[in-house]
Structures are given as C-alpha cells and as structure tokens.
Amino acid sequence: MENMLLRMLGVLLCALAACAEIAPVADFDLMAGKWYTVGFATNAQWFVNHKDSMKMGTSIMTPTEIGDMDLSYSSLKSDGSCWRMTHLAKKTDTPGRFIFHSHVWNNDNDMRVVDVVYDNYALVHTIKTKDGMSEVLNKLYSRTPQASDDLQQKFRQFSLDTGVLAENILILPPNAECPTV
Image 1 (cartoon, rainbow, N blue to C red):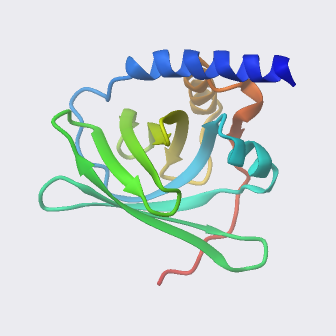
Image 2: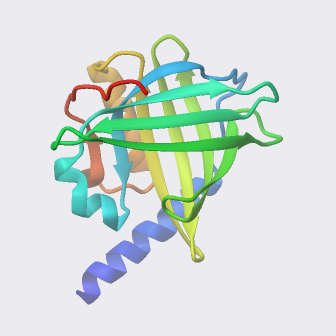
C-alpha cells in the first residue's frame, strides 16, 4: 500500500510539473459542432474504478458571442438512460485556454486545446483542481466515431508525457448516441 501511495505521489508530481508547461495550440479558432469523445486518459480514482464500463459519448461545442464555449456532453448508459453534463467554459487571455467550475464534480477546470484539426480531431488537456489537489484529464475528440491508429498513438504518447499511467489511457468503445433533447 505504501509503495502504491509513493508511486501515485510521484506520478502526481510529474503530472503537475508537466501540466504547467502545456500550452494551447497556436492560432486557435473556436471549435464548433459535434465531436465524439474517442479517447479518455486520467489517473483520477473515479476513472480507475469505472473505466471498464465507460463508452464513447458525444460533445456539442457552441461558441458564444463573446468567445466563451458552451460544452454539452452526453453518453448512453447500459440501462438505456443518458448521462448528460453541461459547462460554460470561459475564455482566458490565452486563446485556446478556458476555465470553468463543474457543479457536478465541484472542481475547477483549466482546459487547453493543445492540438486541433477542425474537421478531424482535437486533443484537449484539462487540469482539474478540488480541495487543493490537481489531476490531469486528457480527451481525444474526433468528428467521426473512429480515430486513426496514428491519432490514437499521438493521444497515448501525449497522455504518457503528461503523467497518465499507460493502463489509464483508453480508446473508448463505440456506443449508440443519446437522443437529442
């Protein structure tokens, strides 16, 4: 147990050091429309406990008139119901970097779009902070439910480079979509 705690502390310190250096993509333009969440990577305990049951979901990103982003997430659960969550991500002085507070998880989020090809994929790095503890969450979004092998490898390598353990990097299995509301 002690060994595991030391290992996790080391990963956390590594992740925090790496996170401080992660910059958004240059020449960022707002990401609008529907995206599939095809990759998910974090060492967060809730994820470790539930990763075997996670499946692909969708995200609708809607820019506001002032440059913020409305984020709407949904994923069809195994019982046929839909899990949904929304956030208003506020722009910062750095293009491609947004901040928001999650009322669902009661944490503060520093979200950075670190790589994007607007008609193909986006790689998003978020630092989630709650009660003084920070965790990294990386997501790979795609315009289609499938991401190329090269893109999956790019996501895996980025996640490893930001301190996520290899066993906590997932390419999510396909899933039916929630009905629109």
